[in-house]
Length: 361
Length: 248
Image 1 (cartoon, chains in turn red, green):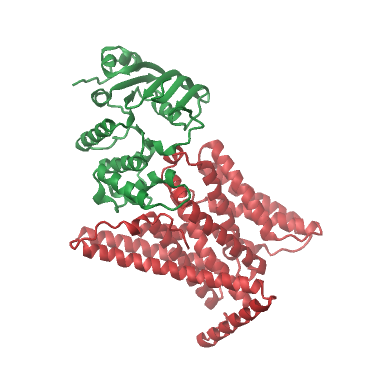
Image 2 (tube, each protein chain N blue to C red; image 1 turned 120 degrees about the vertical axis):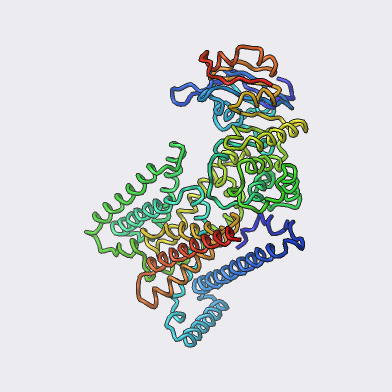
């Protein structure tokens, strides 16, 4: 998780005098907890990516042994916890996808929310839905079985570029072009699905509401590759994205290629949305881009802290939602989103309490 | 055009749709100038400034920044810009003063990590504008005057040669405003060229050494004394006499 390309706040602490030791101690502890949390998330992501890689390459000699060891550990965990989760590769796949969603969705969402582009994720999810429909029709009418997810990715990215094009022409990410894109692509999707229903049955509900069981081998692999790409890109362009998010005009005057970075951000959004759609479903996918960020923004003091807390909250929502969903046999998407909103409400309570504490101080 | 010209406009026109905003304006801003850009509401001041900075492309005419055609100009770190938008937006975005000022270094850093030199430039800029102790506060917890200083610090951190400000003191109390303009004066004395859009003509005639008075067309461009003696103001604002015109 090396997004710390501008860790100016860490290194230039100038107020470490004796008088202010107490307050800096306080923020110091908070910082240590946050950094430990991020390190934990990174470690978790590394384990999940390791699983996907080992599962992918288990035909090869050394990696096959490593994979068997991995699953052996899983059985032990199951035995210890009295669960029936960690011994199944398909559960690992779902968990891996979930953990990665919990990282990349809030990461991209931090920039989207503060650019007041919160609904772009929802729009691109509907575009991706049209992509699923296109892929489905294509597979049904030709002999080429193409991946629905790949089709969603391609159409989602095209949709992202279309939104960007509209935004450039209308000079804003206004809600009118967004509403048109959102409903328009969903309309096309429903038409294609109804038309294609004659050829073969499709379980469209899984894509609308998300389903742990539709995380395919291929879907998990795609999510792993895309997540690494998104994290690397955000780390490389953090400064530019921050500047543009805060003050687009000044960024333009500083000769940043604003159009290019805007396109990058929106394409990354499409990528994250398609990856997340498997678990969360079309309708709920935008929540992971927005809700953890909203919670983090309530209590964070800096943008970097917002980014870190968003990822932490996203991760807690995913894991909490998973546990709830598995134990209650309810859909994962809804469970994750409800957990995220609970965190958001807690954050509001925490921030209003700290304001009260300050004012009575 | 002399080599010390910071901005040169030649016969520049620009329209929004069919609505002309800037018509046939030619002017040059020289190094070390403190240019006050004035005109009635809707007179195209902000548009003219945007044209100078390359935020709009002119429909006709040519614009040069630091001797380069504006659309090829690539030394973003030489310009500090405090937009109307950035100062009037009551942003809820959690971002610290230090993070905002550090943005001034981004044009230098590109995609590489910030260096100790970048961090030093940020601390120096914060000290110059006198808000070093507010560095780790959220920018939206600052008063209007303090926030303006933070934006100036962002420009200073980037080693700016040209500072462009669009009505920077809207919503700032009188005392902070005086202090703010004193800061601009001292930056100008240090050799930074300043272009200031300001609705209070008294402030402009007090501080600026050059004045450009516009209402779509350029009514006056020259030193402040000749502006005060001319009829440019009445012509630009119309003869309605609504103008508050106080010199000191």
